[in-house]
Length: 140
Ligand SMILES: [Zn+2]
Ligand SMILES: [Zn+2]
Image (cartoon, rainbow, N blue to C red; front, side):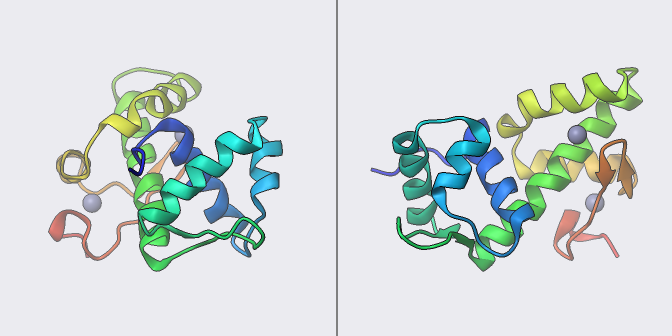
Protein backbone atom coordinates (compact mmCIF):
# COMPACT_ATOMS: atom_id res chain seq x y z
CA UNK A 1 0.00 0.00 0.00
CA UNK A 2 1.29 3.45 -0.89
CA UNK A 3 1.98 5.85 1.95
CA UNK A 4 0.39 9.26 2.42
CA UNK A 5 1.45 11.97 -0.02
CA UNK A 6 0.65 14.97 2.11
CA UNK A 7 3.50 14.74 4.61
CA UNK A 8 5.93 17.58 5.31
CA UNK A 9 8.81 15.49 3.97
CA UNK A 10 7.17 14.53 0.68
CA UNK A 11 6.04 18.11 0.17
CA UNK A 12 9.66 19.24 0.54
CA UNK A 13 10.79 16.62 -1.96
CA UNK A 14 8.22 17.69 -4.55
CA UNK A 15 9.13 21.36 -4.16
CA UNK A 16 12.82 20.49 -4.48
CA UNK A 17 12.31 18.40 -7.63
CA UNK A 18 10.19 21.23 -9.05
CA UNK A 19 12.87 23.82 -8.31
CA UNK A 20 15.56 21.67 -9.90
CA UNK A 21 13.54 21.47 -13.09
CA UNK A 22 15.89 19.40 -15.22
CA UNK A 23 15.59 16.17 -13.23
CA UNK A 24 17.45 14.93 -10.21
CA UNK A 25 18.91 11.70 -8.82
CA UNK A 26 17.47 10.36 -5.57
CA UNK A 27 20.93 10.47 -3.93
CA UNK A 28 20.90 14.25 -4.33
CA UNK A 29 17.65 14.47 -2.40
CA UNK A 30 19.12 12.31 0.37
CA UNK A 31 22.16 14.62 0.57
CA UNK A 32 20.16 17.81 0.45
CA UNK A 33 17.85 16.85 3.32
CA UNK A 34 20.36 14.63 5.15
CA UNK A 35 17.99 11.69 5.11
CA UNK A 36 18.89 8.03 4.62
CA UNK A 37 18.70 6.86 1.03
CA UNK A 38 16.32 4.04 1.95
CA UNK A 39 13.87 6.54 3.48
CA UNK A 40 14.08 8.77 0.43
CA UNK A 41 13.53 5.79 -1.87
CA UNK A 42 10.40 4.79 0.01
CA UNK A 43 8.95 8.28 -0.27
CA UNK A 44 9.84 8.52 -3.94
CA UNK A 45 8.25 5.15 -4.53
CA UNK A 46 5.00 6.47 -3.00
CA UNK A 47 5.16 9.63 -5.10
CA UNK A 48 5.69 7.50 -8.20
CA UNK A 49 2.75 5.24 -7.35
CA UNK A 50 0.56 8.28 -6.86
CA UNK A 51 1.55 9.56 -10.31
CA UNK A 52 3.45 12.67 -9.25
CA UNK A 53 6.90 11.66 -10.45
CA UNK A 54 8.61 9.27 -12.84
CA UNK A 55 10.63 7.07 -10.57
CA UNK A 56 13.25 4.54 -11.55
CA UNK A 57 16.03 4.20 -8.95
CA UNK A 58 18.71 4.49 -11.65
CA UNK A 59 17.27 7.40 -13.57
CA UNK A 60 16.82 11.08 -12.89
CA UNK A 61 13.50 11.90 -11.32
CA UNK A 62 11.06 14.19 -13.10
CA UNK A 63 7.67 15.51 -12.09
CA UNK A 64 4.74 14.38 -14.23
CA UNK A 65 2.10 16.88 -15.41
CA UNK A 66 0.12 16.00 -12.28
CA UNK A 67 3.23 16.53 -10.17
CA UNK A 68 3.92 19.92 -11.71
CA UNK A 69 0.42 21.21 -11.07
CA UNK A 70 0.59 19.79 -7.54
CA UNK A 71 3.91 21.58 -6.96
CA UNK A 72 2.38 24.83 -8.14
CA UNK A 73 -0.48 24.29 -5.72
CA UNK A 74 2.02 23.62 -2.91
CA UNK A 75 3.66 27.00 -3.51
CA UNK A 76 0.32 28.79 -3.68
CA UNK A 77 -0.83 27.09 -0.48
CA UNK A 78 2.38 27.91 1.36
CA UNK A 79 2.26 31.56 0.33
CA UNK A 80 -1.47 32.03 0.99
CA UNK A 81 -0.93 30.70 4.52
CA UNK A 82 2.20 32.82 4.98
CA UNK A 83 0.26 35.90 3.91
CA UNK A 84 -2.59 34.99 6.23
CA UNK A 85 -0.12 34.86 9.11
CA UNK A 86 1.65 38.12 8.25
CA UNK A 87 -1.77 39.79 7.94
CA UNK A 88 -2.49 38.49 11.43
CA UNK A 89 0.61 40.10 12.86
CA UNK A 90 3.38 37.50 12.61
CA UNK A 91 6.74 38.65 11.30
CA UNK A 92 7.76 37.35 7.87
CA UNK A 93 10.11 34.74 9.27
CA UNK A 94 7.58 33.32 11.75
CA UNK A 95 4.77 33.44 9.19
CA UNK A 96 6.79 31.41 6.69
CA UNK A 97 7.88 28.94 9.36
CA UNK A 98 4.39 28.39 10.77
CA UNK A 99 2.94 28.02 7.29
CA UNK A 100 5.51 25.31 6.63
CA UNK A 101 4.55 23.57 9.87
CA UNK A 102 0.82 23.31 9.09
CA UNK A 103 0.44 23.54 5.32
CA UNK A 104 0.19 19.79 4.72
CA UNK A 105 -2.96 19.74 6.89
CA UNK A 106 -4.92 22.37 4.97
CA UNK A 107 -6.98 21.02 2.06
CA UNK A 108 -7.17 22.73 -1.30
CA UNK A 109 -10.78 23.87 -0.97
CA UNK A 110 -9.89 25.77 2.20
CA UNK A 111 -6.92 27.41 0.48
CA UNK A 112 -9.21 28.46 -2.37
CA UNK A 113 -11.65 29.95 0.16
CA UNK A 114 -8.89 31.88 1.92
CA UNK A 115 -7.45 32.99 -1.43
CA UNK A 116 -10.87 34.29 -2.45
CA UNK A 117 -11.51 36.01 0.90
CA UNK A 118 -8.17 37.81 0.56
CA UNK A 119 -9.03 38.94 -2.98
CA UNK A 120 -6.68 36.55 -4.79
CA UNK A 121 -3.50 38.27 -3.60
CA UNK A 122 -0.51 38.27 -5.93
CA UNK A 123 2.31 38.10 -3.42
CA UNK A 124 3.35 36.95 0.02
CA UNK A 125 6.53 37.91 1.86
CA UNK A 126 8.28 34.78 0.59
CA UNK A 127 7.23 34.97 -3.05
CA UNK A 128 4.73 35.53 -5.84
CA UNK A 129 1.36 33.81 -5.60
CA UNK A 130 0.39 32.34 -8.95
CA UNK A 131 -3.23 31.54 -9.63
CA UNK A 132 -3.76 28.69 -12.02
CA UNK A 133 -6.91 28.94 -14.15
CA UNK A 134 -8.74 26.54 -11.83
CA UNK A 135 -7.82 28.53 -8.73
CA UNK A 136 -10.97 29.32 -6.77
CA UNK A 137 -12.93 28.96 -9.99
CA UNK A 138 -12.84 32.70 -10.56
CA UNK A 139 -9.28 33.98 -10.81
CA UNK A 140 -8.63 35.79 -14.07
ZN1 LIG B 1 7.44 31.05 3.04
ZN1 LIG C 1 -7.17 32.77 -5.97
